[in-house]
Structure formats: C-alpha cells, structure tokens
Amino acid sequence: MLGLASDGFAASTSTSTSTQMNYNSFTEMPVWKDSLELSKKVFYLSQGLPRSEDYGLTSQIRRSANSISANLAEGFGRKSRKDKSHFYIISRGSAYETQSHILYGLGVEYFNEKESKEIVALYNDLIFSLNKLIKSLS
Image (cartoon, rainbow, N blue to C red):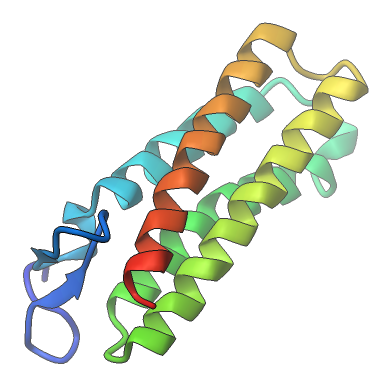
C-alpha cells in the first residue's frame, strides 16, 4: 500500500536545502523516479552483453543500478535523519559504482560510446540530486 511511511506519518525529505518538501511515498521523490528510469536504461544497455558475462558484468551493473532506488526507498522508510542520510549515501555510492561498470564496459568495447557517455552524464545529474538530498539532512 502506497501513501504513508512505515511509521504511519508522512516522511519528510528534501531536494533543496532551502525548501522542505513532504512526500507520502518514496515513489513521489523525483530522485527515486530518476534512479528507476536510469536502472531501466542500464538494463537495456546490458542486454547486449555476451553470455560469458551473465554472472559478471551483467549481474554487477544491474545490481548496482537497482540498488540506488532500493536504498532511496529504504532510507525514506527510516525515521531519523542519520538513518535516512546513511541509505542515501549508499545510493550515491551505487551510482558511482554503476558509472564505473559502464566505463569498464565501454573500455572493453561491450557498449556503444555515445549511449554510454549519455548514461554516465545522466548518472552525474543523479549524483548531484543525491548530494543535495544528503546535504538537506545535515
């Protein structure tokens, strides 16, 4: 059921240090929506990987991409600013990890250069949004 945080109260997060925004669900957070869209882009990017990478790069890149939205959701459900920040920081780390996997795939010529660079740039935007969210909690 969507709508209320696990504690029964609307959880509070912010995408800006000057404006406090209240969300009733993590699914309302623009940064979560962006991370989910990027996760789908990574899924499609990784579909062309060779079968020999099924338990290597394919699995790693998809897990790190999915971890971002999952940790945002988990952080949203936490009560304290410290707990929220902890999970949002983990999300940021997973964003960097995903970028690293994309750059590796590009380096070994698994991925198209133009598409890879576009996705890496979108992750830079996501990381910027995550940094603002983390800063708003400190």
